Structures are given as C-alpha cells and as structure tokens.
Image (cartoon, rainbow, N blue to C red; front, top):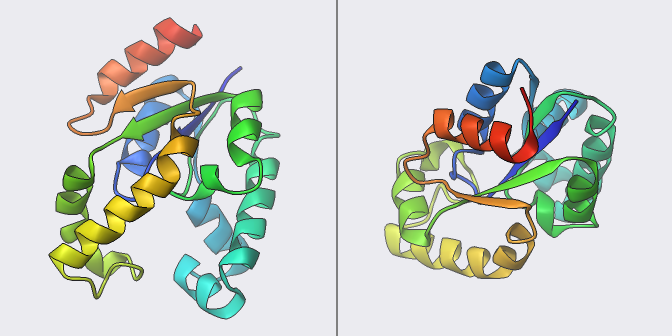
Length: 172
C-alpha cells in the first residue's frame, strides 16, 4: 500500500510521469487539478477568476486531504500545491513525495510550446516567461525541496523512476 505525490513546477512532467508510473505500478492515477475541475465544474483559470487564488488554494487543500484517504495512488499535484497550507507536510506524512526538478531554462522551452493551454502564461513573451518562471521557482524551491526524493525532470525515464521507486520505497 503506497501513495506517491509528484511535485514540481508547471510543465515539469508531473501528469505525464504520473500516468506512466501509475500504469506500471497498477495504481490509480489522480491529477489533482483535473479532480478539482471535475468537482467544481470549472477550469482552474475560471476558478481563479471567479473565486480568487485564496479560495482555490483552500479547495485544493481539501481535495488533497480527500485524496489521501485512498490507497495505491499516484497523484500529480498542481505546481503550487506544496506551497500552501501544510500540504507538503501532509504529503510527506501520508506518502512518498517526489520533486521533478527542472531548470528555469528547460521549463521555459517546454512551456513556450504549451502557452495556449496555460492562461497564466498565454500572453507572455519568451523574456517575460523566463522572468516569471525564474521568480516563481525562487519562491517555490524551498517547498519543492522538502520532498523525500528529488529526480531530474528533464529527459525523465519513467522506467528508471519505477525502478527507483521500487528500490527506495519497496513497492512491488
């Protein structure tokens, strides 16, 4: 019985790695943002616009606590999830946390190709995006580094992640 919480900045590959990891382990995959969107029948940007970030973070915290009641799960957390309330402490106490670490440059090159899907960065130039990502990473790194395991997100080999998880955590 195990729980895995994948953390990291937007674009670090949490959802992609999470889906593959859960499939290889035979666990349920949960994308925390998608869960919130389904529950509230609004996209995350719509929730931010109508209720504000403070209310969204409370919704996210409550969703995280509900998810923790399940077993054999891989959860892709939102980029900001570890940074609010006591979310990182909760995740560390209830499961295994993995930070998919990437440099600002690597994140920017990934995010440039997906700007239209991410309203928070949609209208930013490459220079503005780089400044935005760098600033946010500086604010969030302390939280991300509280994860029990830190792995390189760039060119992440999910088979290696599965082996790592099995060896470190003792999951079959």
